Image (tube, rainbow, N blue to C red; front, side, top):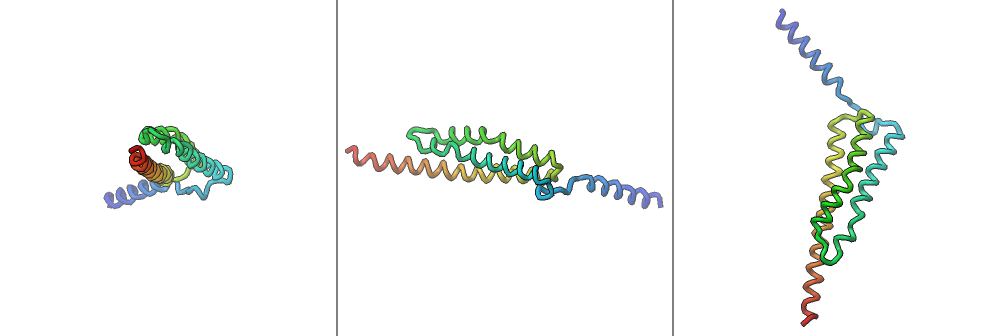
Length: 132
């Protein structure tokens, strides 16, 4: 009987601990907080687009430009995380949202870098025959 009571009380304590985890999503945040969240996302996306022209400059080291871009834009993801945490959004949702934003932007950035490198290689290849 004592083991049963201990087991049941242990389950109740575990359930209480699980219940303490926030079940709030970003859709449950107040409108002002959602506006802040969308502003952080928009600023992050704008930031990721700012250095695009640098990739196409002759002699630009695209990896350096890409790294600079990622580092310059990281504060916008910190702002996004801060808004979600301040509004008690579920930690898993918060971290997933930030990670998804980062990985999507990195994939798009990689595509832009590869396209730029291919364009530079094609331009160099086209310029070589005309020099002869």
